[in-house]
Length: 246
Image 1 (tube, rainbow, N blue to C red):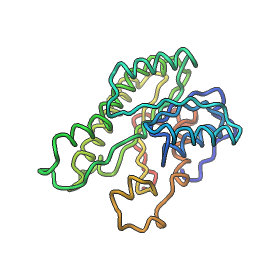
Image 2 (image 1 turned 90 degrees about the vertical axis):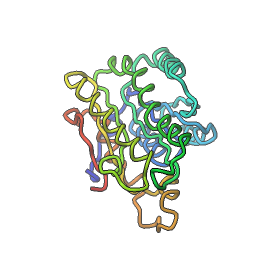
Image 3 (image 1 turned 120 degrees about the vertical axis):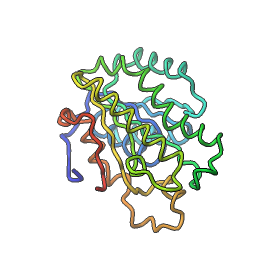
Image 4 (image 1 turned 45 degrees about the vertical axis):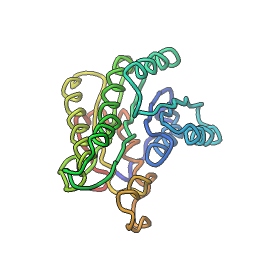
């Protein structure tokens, strides 16, 4: 799969929303989707970072993206409903959604997890995905073939000591994807999970500060998986969990 190369401009006339688009994997995915012809909606909490991605897409000759500054920590269902309304007004439909944004929190014993941190991680990693997906489903239904990618983790498939709330949130993400994939099995929308594995990102550095980052894959190395799951050629992939570094 790492050798997968789609056709030039295969995402022409497609609209794709990427969460956490200001940095790391989200930024790279947004840039790649734009390079293949998509109009990208950049969602993130740091306006400056989103503007930098916007500028790069424009400088590379891509279609003008949309910027959505939104802090998932404090966003409510009304915010997501408003976003869905704006997308419908401007674009009419949504062809792809990449759930990339996530919060790691502090790693440590389960018994020591502060309630506030637990709630914060669940809000960003689980609740926001539920609110956003639910709000956007009517728009995704309007697309001839829509793809929704959830980001999972190895610790969301097999629990690991000291990964606490983050691991539990990824189990929930996995379950959310599987429920949706089953409900929409015979529809034009497909749902899958992608586990990027250990990647050179700020989140990885905070989890493994002593690790030699030069040995890790970069977000760009993993993009064939993200491109494949947005391709019509992956229409048979439904309810699957892919591991970019199996």
